[in-house]
Image (cartoon, rainbow, N blue to C red):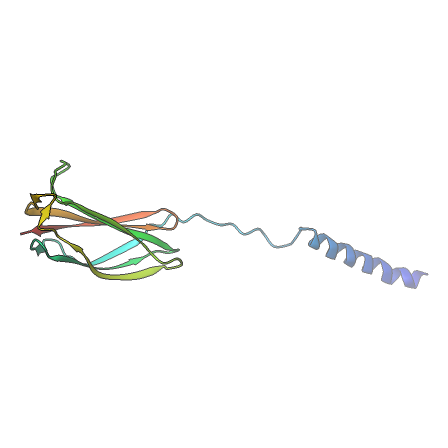
Length: 151
């Protein structure tokens, strides 16, 4: 009987240990997820500050966007440079959604055309702020601006 108990007691302890681990208690610590607070990075190649465009021309955009987790979108806004004053001059705004799962993307496009007229009015010549805003999946934003001239 004593020989039998020598084997039964360790076997019972092993069985209890295994069943406890199956019921949710483990020896590994829980995984802690830290929120993404890092802003994306915009490396603008074109246009460069001070570049001039003729009315009717296309604006070429070339830039690299990157994020430590995942990119979501980028937005381009062009508005008359008036130090905070609103004007009725030509303005442009568009947002592009990026493919899911991308940490970096190279943008090379010429989709933005400067109109000759805006609702019957001549497009005003002068300085315009071109602002690019990149947003990551967590909602972090980064922006960069350049001053361009319509001539």
